[in-house]
Image (cartoon, rainbow, N blue to C red):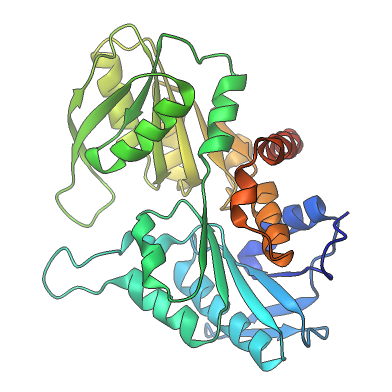
Length: 337
């Protein structure tokens, strides 16, 4: 049980409840008492059911499956905490879907991630904690501190425990934009990299894999990306790798945003398994034979503990702390199976 600098008060929005409860279990604390109501016409109402005066509070709310409702609810929670005289409010956003809108890459479009950052700050947030933003530079959209966590240590440890890390493994990026992430995985696992040449012609969720750059013949391939919605890119590159002579294909995602149809595509594809974190709840996980889930909640809980103790967040990357996080994550994974 956590016994550091004062009581940690963790609250959760509607879709953040499962993740927040896992964080509380890691910290040995109780989830804060609060109520969210969504009225029939779509309005959202939030209420804190206990005193948080002069407390440092943490509100857990992923922005993913229902991004507009979830984002508005997060704003209302931050406002409610500030009006209830909280000492500080930290927004825990395990997955931030509007991070995809990080630039003005065509005329007359909004930089949506910047708009979201401005809104979160306008209602009074003091700090943001998130993981694997689609574009890391989004941290710079905020004037308040942003602690950016990484799923790679969890995913790499899972891959190691499957016994597939050897001289025959290749890490594959589905496109040039994810090449840096793939190189980081490859460095961690001690293996080479291959890159898919992907193009996207519109704003739909379909992309075309044109070519694969790198030697994958006779290799076991680990495709890594930050998220997938339709599963199309993962499936296309899996078939492309097989056509190039790959032996086996696995996949790892920081966030599981797969739709039911996307998960069905994965089930029918050459991908042997797909591992992802639980930053978003996957309601179809139980019916999948290929989806594996590893919990990122202990990592976020440890970040909260460090922030609450006013210690450097770099402490999270100490070997002894990382090992405990990994062990706790795998314990949580076993409870999900």
